[in-house]
Amino acid sequence: MKKIFSVATLALLFLSCKKNNNPSDGYFTATINGSSFLAGGHQSFVVYTSAQLADTSHFLLLSGGDDNQNINITLYDSNGITNKIYYLNNPPTVAYSSSAEYRNYGKDISHGYVTDAYHTGVINIQLDTLKHRISGSFSFKGIFQSSTDSINVTNGKFSLPYINQ
Image (cartoon, rainbow, N blue to C red; front, side, top):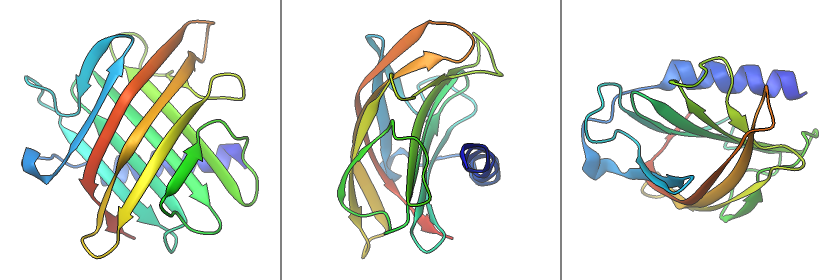
């Protein structure tokens, strides 16, 4: 189940990345180990923010990045994504799975800092279905997949238009 979820997440991410040329459309920010992160950044050339609800609003992919780094949060809830707090550490089940990942392309493009049973996080989601807008906050601690190095992502905030697929 975890492999299918990861493959689906990556496929949706690469198919849906788009430039956000209008910062007034929304924002995606966080603090990564004490340093500010703003999706799109000030000097970046690859800019994207993305929020997608898919599979009749049961699957959410939330992404923000720039030319050096990105944050991806994925959720699957068989009851549908709603206004609530989700924990970013649950092992995948038939009814629910979630994960968060931070990648720094200067460090290692093939691995990222991910949540797991011991390195956890939380996301608070607010959906405005009339305006097709998703907003909220998040934080997580991720572990680098090929070592014991960890990272703290705190003060995450976002407000983005979303698309239904």
